[in-house]
Length: 321
Image (cartoon, rainbow, N blue to C red; front, side):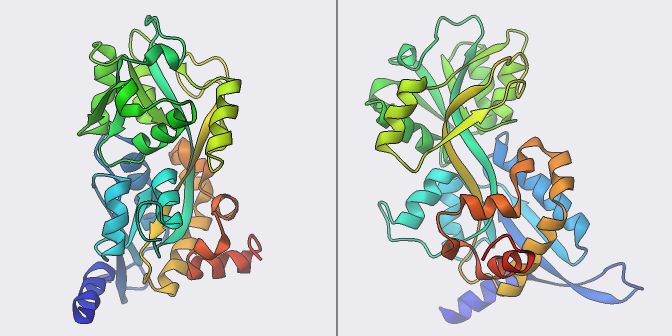
């Protein structure tokens, strides 16, 4: 088993030699496998952008994105050593770290990705105005295996609602299928999260337009009282086409997690490179503006959950003690 783990690690991290632009000297590239999610969702969009800016910034890195079923598959793939790093939504990460329904994970945080304010989107001409209006209606809660359905379960549970009993729940094989289902009426609403989330952008940018539904002030208080780990978050006005007002809701932070035995020096290099391209990544992708060293320290449930190699770099630049 130890031999198999060593072989697996070698396959993932050591891709052999390649000629980098260093006076013609042949240098070894470090290949990093990055798990994302199903095509059409926010994770592949983010993961592809992450890999591109990181690879451009460090010629000795080769980060290779890989489509998966999403957060709930990424965690066991990381634990099995079949991925080096992976994108994981806040709720699955919270459950894994806390050992809810499973033993506590030993995975580590590489970086905070972005905050994920959760809400529904409906067609602009739909009669639905509140979450209660959607009870009994068909609602697409996101891709199977992604973190979105877990976030919605917590939110709805805080309101005394059961996702699979009080709604006609629809789970997608591909995250990108949701907007068309809203537009043609197969579902009354699509659940999602984030600023610049592709599903929301697609519905809001369609000919018929869109309207967003989030918990009101009293509902936010009820949810927060039951699930304190959810954080008050806002979607600024103008984040989506024809969204003229700020939307207040609840949500969590998504993370890039690393397998437990990712070498400290590799994690350090990744953290250093990422810190150096924060502004570049922000220009490339709106959600990535929240991907910063400072936000990682603030969003992590505890510093002990940040990878030791990353934490070493954070202490060197003064964002962690």
